[in-house]
Length: 201
Ligand SMILES: Nc1nc2c(c(=O)[nH]1)N[C@H]1C(S)=C(S)[C@@H](COP(=O)(O)O)O[C@H]1N2
Ligand SMILES: [Mo]
Image (cartoon, rainbow, N blue to C red; front, side):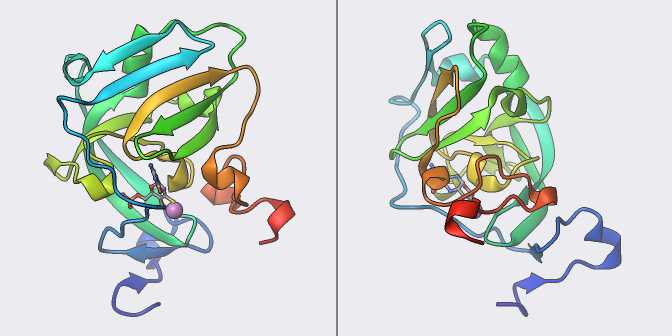
């Protein structure tokens, strides 16, 4: 697969590329199953579990502060893309609207199409995480998770749920789709937390 589309990082960039990753100039699409198509009129985002239940419309999200982000993107299948430019809502700004029960320590990200992925509350609440609706100045294409996806830059990209439409706050860890199918529970790229020991690596 190396060659035209993937290259080993040069020295200048190598300190930004986690071990075992290769740079791609394109933006591959990695989806399990079909791409859901959701209009912003029908779009809805829900919060439940150990947080006060809440429902947000597209307009509710757009009324929150909008920020630009540049972030690196690391897929566990070994491609990385540096300096992706996004626009959206910071998780910390969104969370100002959520009342979390103090017993919550973990959460499940839910999506249109049924994909799920879990994340510790502490990893979710980091300042650099955001919900993105725009990439490189264009509306986020459906195949990349539009109208809205989560981006969690410090973990492998399977935690960056596309078509996200819900957060379930939990008092203990539960496994999402890939975590049940052999991926690591947390997925930190610098530690190469790729797969769980149970399924080998
Ligand atoms: N809903 C949903 N989100 C998802 C996925 C998916 O299959 N469904 N794949 C994950 C994986 S493995 C990766 S690498 C990134 C890929 O994002 P991209 O297709 O925009 O490159 O999305 C993540 N989010
Ligand atoms: Mo991935």
